[in-house]
Length: 268
Image: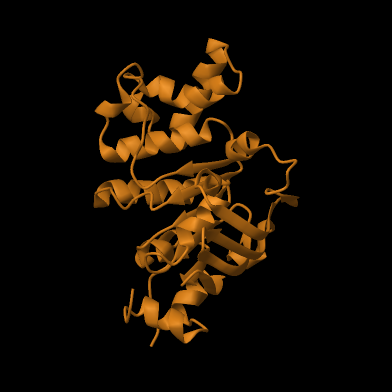
């Protein structure tokens, strides 16, 4: 029996109508001898929220990190297959990884602000990419903090240490820091799992606002969160994609019995 989860009244057009931005074709990833991702093929739509769900160790975070080549940092990683963003194979030797990570930003499970001021956290990326003019940095900091729904809370305290902020504020600061370099895609790896319910709600509301401008891919263990904020949901199990569908469709009537078992709480 499938479970029914309420969809938000503001839910966007189903993901299937959007243009595909990320194409994953027969992707296999190995950590040494361990086969972490198995023949994964998946299309991710532009300017929508795609949620990856599944039990711990199923490969969802591994795939997320593959989208900006964070797995390159892990010794012994080997990848076969193709990931294309806007038609470009991101594992091609011609691709500059620094440029890729500018366009594909990431927010991690634990808020990780730099031990710098709020202003310097947001300005860090633009400065790294050559922006030095203070008036331009001021504009970027303000617009990024506004986009992350944090400006009104910190605008009079920009010189204060980022570490003085609450956990939820720190996570929104990390989102602002990612947005400051003008990415096309925002990856969120369990970005609310360390937060209290009120902060989690603020991040979810922020995701709803940001999806009109950015392509968002999020890993979450919270199926209700996936139902609330995503357009497309992908269920992973043992390194494989079991099912991918519009979120409402997947939760209301999954086509695979393993998906139904997971969302019904029979395992996971």
